[in-house]
Length: 135
Image 1 (cartoon, rainbow, N blue to C red):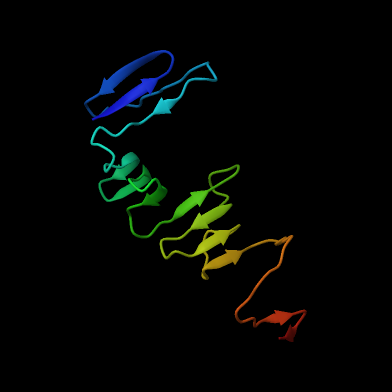
Image 2: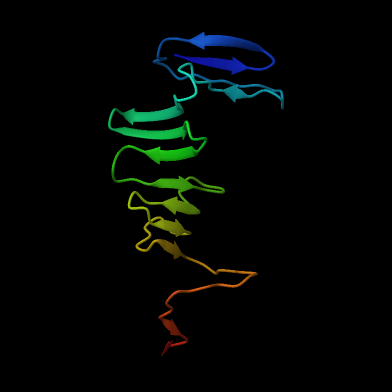
């Protein structure tokens, strides 16, 4: 059970799973949707998007105060897009690899596009090529 609160309009307790599309809307810029754990401070608060029992996308605020975004299907990742749902602006694969501008990163960090830095860049070991030359 969780409490569904729309402020300043009303509070309602949702006890059953809704088996139909539900729409929550407001014309006020001060309204919000609040999920609160009823199980105490050790119980995480989760918003679960379920395709099936084995395929879920979860946004969780856990007991350590961390916000986690993850899925349970074992082969997908987490994508954050600035515009369209297929752009892959930032993608974290289930392997832990992170892609910026790419949804299939093969390294811990893979960037497709230009990189700009305003401070120092530090390396433990640097290997690669620049303009066809090896360093």
